[in-house]
Length: 311
Image 1 (tube, rainbow, N blue to C red):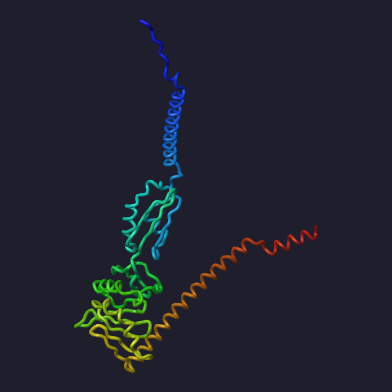
Image 2 (cartoon, one colour):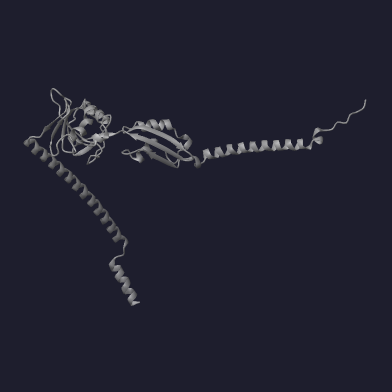
């Protein structure tokens, strides 16, 4: 039987061999790239390159940025992949002044924290200090010598139930109206334990009820616009709405009250100014003392000059 000569296909088609080599090279490159990426990822995760370098805090007003960072427990040694957003969010929202928090990673090394604080709806005066009241009626422990100016002063609310209800009513009041209120005094009566008296920034007084406060108080600007200029008195909005002009005795009492308030404000301002001046004076004294200690004595300077002259 005649033997047949077998010819390789690769010999017949040399391009096929080159194509196979190219495919093999491509596969090798892909495998090497994947291996390099895996090694780089492991090195990145284990190196300081993946540590948090910056924590950005947004939305805070009264709670300090340092306090928020401390609650989050994020430091420069924290790996950005180990930042547990949900747990940090819960810790932040457990703060009595923070109602909402959001934590996001911003690669390569930044964590962004955004918070929303509870609104301060009033200040309670106690022992010459002012204590903030939050929108839920919570009374903060921190005090300040002066109210923040962003909410009215609440006086006479010695029962937490009425204070909480007043806080909720103030929260629903438009800012344009609440900014006109200077003080709110709780003046309960036997037939109306919810009665309050408001002292407005334009000189009027308002008698109202806590329970209908947020629904009736928005009409205050329109009521005032209908009054004759120069009139002073009490606007009743608890039952109906009408104006009662001050009597002569009430007028004198009102003027004395306003004068006493102005004097107390001036006194507090002068105290703050004097304390600031004392602090500046102390700093100046310290700098002068430091300058004296750093500068050479006059006697040594004179001795040095005399020695130079003799030389």
